[in-house]
Amino acid sequence: MPTPATPSAQKPAGDDRNLVAVDATTAVTFEDKVNLFWKKNRTVVIALCVLVVVGILGKGLMDRLAAQKELDVEKAYAAATTSEQLRSFSAAHEGHSLAGIAQLRLADEAYSAGKSADAITGYDKAAGVLKTGPLAVRAKMGRALGKVQAGKNAEAIADLKLLADDAAQFKAVRAEAAYHLASLAVESGNAADAQKFIDQITAVEPMGMWMQRAFALRAMLPPVPVTPPAPVAPAVPATDKKDEAATPGLKLELPGKK
Image (cartoon, rainbow, N blue to C red; front, side):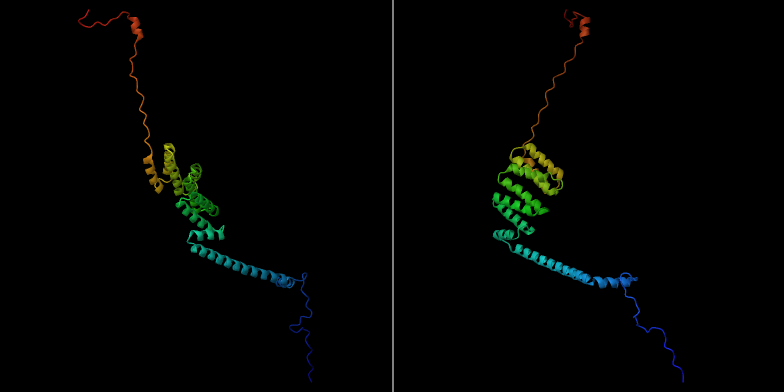
């Protein structure tokens, strides 16, 4: 009868009873280190991931709410067709750019109606909201013209000069401001200042609309007086005193006379 084979000393597959537990001192491979980190910090990592997801979702929700709110403001502005509605809209959305535009429209209405005080106030409010851009400049120009309408020419001239002399400003704006300055100078009879501002328009925008209007202003200026040249005295021939001393008593005798 054959003797049964001696069992092999090799460990069966999957027998990890003699393996050493992996810890911070025995971790060698990258995989061991990752597993160890995960076991130690998985709660913190999961919490951070949850916070990131919540933050992304929250930002998306806030952006959507802001977009919806902006759309509602735009709809409300479009629905404001009367002066009272514009005032209500501006009061309800104070600080919004569309509220500044509403104030600009109200100021234009007041200016057209000759209500200079209301116009100046409206342009001031519009300029306070519309900090930069063409509409902000239009508010400043309107405020200056409102002061002209109110008879505050000194203040208006100061405001217009700021616009006309601003090299960073639009050329058309500078030319318009210079035109209004020239017009005020013509009204006050100051031909020299009027010509100076017309020359400024020529330098800033010689081919623009305001240059064409400046030609009409120039025609209103009084003619420049021409000073006639001073009369020149006739030249007197010099007398040779040396010859007179050398020939004393010399007389000129005419033929036929003694």
